[in-house]
Length: 480
Image (cartoon, rainbow, N blue to C red; front, side, top):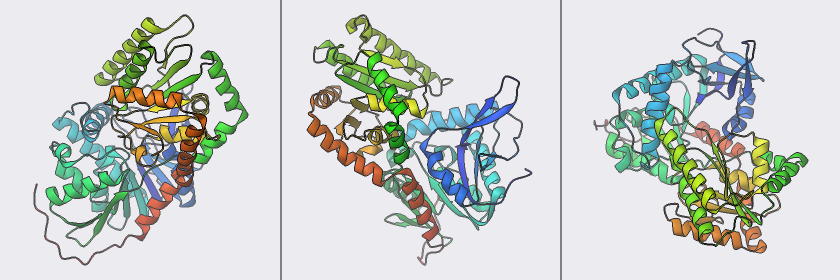
C-alpha cells in the first residue's frame, strides 16, 4: 500500500466514516456517514494526527488508495463480493450477531465463513500495522474485527491497542457454542483495554478467559504469561447530546415536527418506534401490543397513532426478508381491522432518514417506544431524551437494552411480556405532565453529563494510563 500516512491514533472499524457516492458521469465522491461514533471520534482524530481504517461499503476487488476527506485521513480496505457474503453477512451477522444477542435467532456455524473472517481480520490488522506510527494508539471497533488486536500485536508490539464491543457479550453457556471460541478470546486479548457497554458483559468475558483460556484474573484485570495485563471493563456509549438538542431547538425542526403532527391528524398522543429492521429489536411484539390496545378499546385511532420507522438492514439476508414480510403483514392486518379512512392505527415507514428528520420525529412524538429483546445500548432512546429539551415526553424502554441501566426513570418493560408492555404503554399514555417532566428531567441530566465525547475521552485516557507490565506469577495457559 502506497501513500499511507504514519498516524499517532488509528481507528480500525468495519466501515469508513464516509459513504461513497457515484455521480451520473461515473465520478466518485464521498459524504459523511451519520452516526455517533463518527461524531465522537472525528475531533479526537483531528487533534492526534489520526487515521481511520475501514471498508468503503461496496464489494470491489480493486484497491482504493488512502485519501483525505474533509481533513480526515482515510485508509480503505477492499473486500470481494465473496468476502462480503462470508465475512460480513455470514460470520459477522449470521454467526456472531445472533449468538451475542442471546440466540434470538439461531446462529449458523460454517467453516468457510470462519476462514473468511480470519482472512479479512488479517487484512485490517496489516493495514493498521502499516499506518500506525511508532508507539501509536490503535482503537479497534466492534464484533466484526475481534481477531485484529492479537494479529496487530504480533506485528507491532510497540502499540497501545484498545478494543470496544458495541453489542452485548454473551454468558458462557451461549459463547461456548462457538467452535472458534478460544481464537476469539485470544484475539481480543491482544488489546490492552477491552471496553464493553455494561459491567455484566465485561464480567462474562473475564470469566470465559479464566475458564476457557486459563489465565489468572482479578476483578476486571487479566494477567497474561508474557507479563502484560489486560483490562476488561464497561464504558457505556452515548450520543452527541448537544448536537441533537441544538437540532431539536432549531426553527426548521420545530416546523417539521408540527407538520408531522398535522399530517397524522393531530392526535392526542403519538407513539414512535425507530429501529433498524432487525429481529433483536422487538418491533413485531410492540406493534402487536399496540394493536391489541386498539382492538380492546383502550386506545382509539383518532386519539392515538403509532409511527414505526424501520430502517432497511441486511436485505440480502433471508431472515431479514422474512422479518420484513411478517411486520408488514401485521401492520396491514391491524390497519385493516381497526383503522379508519384517513386514520390508520399504525404508520409504517420502511426507510432511512437524515438526522434533521429524526429530530423532528422525536419532537413530534409524545411517547417513544424502545423495546428490543437485547441491545448493547440503544442510542435511539438517548437521542429521544436529548431532543426533549422542554422536559416533556415519555420513554417506554426494554429492561434488556443497555440504556436501561442509565435511564432508570423510563417506563421499563419486559419485551417478552405482551400484557406488561400494554400496561406500560397505557401508563405512559395516561401519565400526567408533572410525572413525565420529573422522569424526563432526570434522564436528560444523565445524557447531558455522559455524552459521546466523554465516552471517547474516558476510554482513551484509561488506555493511556494502563501499566504495560504486571508482576504477578502466572502459569502458561491451557488449551480449551
